[in-house]
Amino acid sequence: MMPRKNTVHRYFDGTDTEELFKHNLRENYKQLQQNGWDENSVIDYKIDSNGFRNDTDEIPKDSIMILGCSFAMGIGLRREQTFGHMISKKLNLPYLNYAHQGSGMLSSFYIANKFIPIVKPKHIFYLRPDDNRVDIYNSNQPCYSKPLSVLNLPTNTRKVERWRSMTNNRSFEYNWVLNDEWRNQIVELTNIAITKLAEDHNATLVIHYANEDEPTSSKNKELELWDKGQKSKARDLMHDGEEMHKYWAYKFLEPLGIK
Image (cartoon, rainbow, N blue to C red):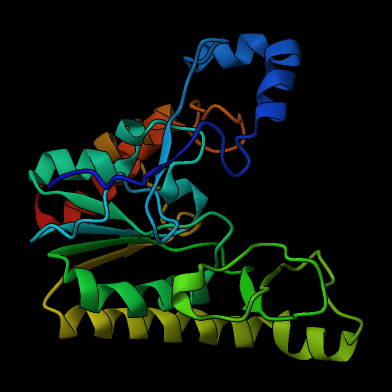
């Protein structure tokens, strides 16, 4: 499996910006050091031709697919610090990361629908984005988060959250975009759709949602990993760090009987 010739190298991405890093070096240096970062810390975000964090365009057989948003993508962390990489090592299988920063549930479905039939992964690990992230399209407003051109979606997409008003049509927003019942249906339907895609292509699917899957004291190992992970931060000091990725690697492997 050879690396592609035109891999894009980014040394900052998403919320892990050069400006924020310089700010944290000045204002939050102690916190950076506590989390293993300093002025010499380098992260190489290798991006494939589809815009995902993969250092190859090759599609390996019996691979692992990662779905989710910026945390699953590993913003602020080196590739080897992410739960996808940890799971890959544990299962001794190659992995492809199709998580994308700023994406919501519908984006995860679009990506799954496009790439599951192509990749035909052996396992899919989906860390579901926040329920408040709903994708709507508006070509007349600045882009809040861009979809990938390979998906043939409209040029601009915007992410709608409870506290952020995206349109002037307040009635539409409150009755549909921000309506709890509607959002719950989107959660259920996208989960069903991705589950069906996995079944159709003989892939094992494990779905977790961080806000619902906090550990209980009945699982000592899980609770220990969670508590340790809560103290860990990525280089942007916004995303959880490597220790929390160890927790999610544990959670995703647990249904497969692997610890």
